[in-house]
Length: 261
Ligand SMILES: Nc1ncnc2c1ncn2[C@@H]1O[C@H](COP(=O)(O)OP(=O)(O)OP(=O)(O)O)[C@@H](O)[C@H]1O
Ligand SMILES: [Mg+2]
Image (cartoon, rainbow, N blue to C red; front, side):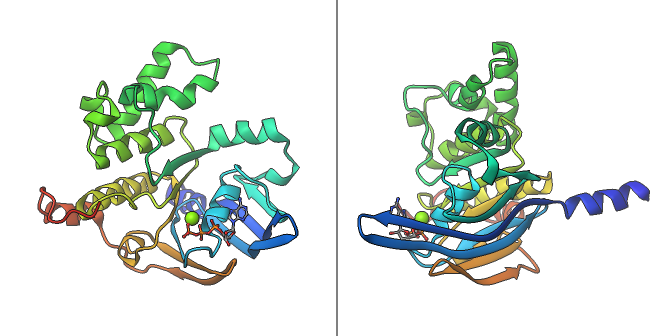
């Protein structure tokens, strides 16, 4: 009983806390106000979809949360660590340890096998032996159902499989949060649901997931939808009954019904 209560408290653990985030891009005399004061807490159990029109600040927000960029003003705590007080090396280190990135265009190295692509983030860690590196990467590939494709090159994989390799690469360092900017943007319907099913599984295992999407159908698989408008939060809604991607896959035809690429 005690353990159950403890777990319930842990699931409420705040992983990301931002307060009054402002980002102004200066282009000569012109100032672009990309973020005009974003405040939110993201909890461990959250699977968030960030939505909003083009130019509303979604990618700017993700870049700051991913420690790839710094805000003009505001506070950011990642897993209890004050990111605002860090120098460039500390930021890179924190990024590598705590965050996994997934991109719309997969960003895999084309002349490198799936396994080697997944190993890449571990290369920055001199303490890991090559044997450990391989074992961890195979485990990450297994967790996205792709262990049998470890020695394939990206060109020998479907779009969905390439995105799953990219998710394995994001997972290999045991991140606390996965950030994905339009991860299903280049995928057909069934493959998008496959990717959402993997994110749902990871989220259930305790990894916080934040995606950007333009599609309400995709946001319906997450458990919290946040809409941006002109650099501000317009809506922040709990999804009471998220769609279940794994269950839907069982009833979807395996062959593509439509070509969306
Ligand atoms: N590096 C930059 N320099 C100058 N302005 C930028 C830069 N990056 C983004 N902007 C501007 O900041 C605003 C927010 O851009 P952002 O890329 O965050 O939007 P977005 O919501 O991700 O849009 P999309 O849906 O098209 O990807 C836009 O007006 C954009 O032109
Ligand atoms: Mg964007």
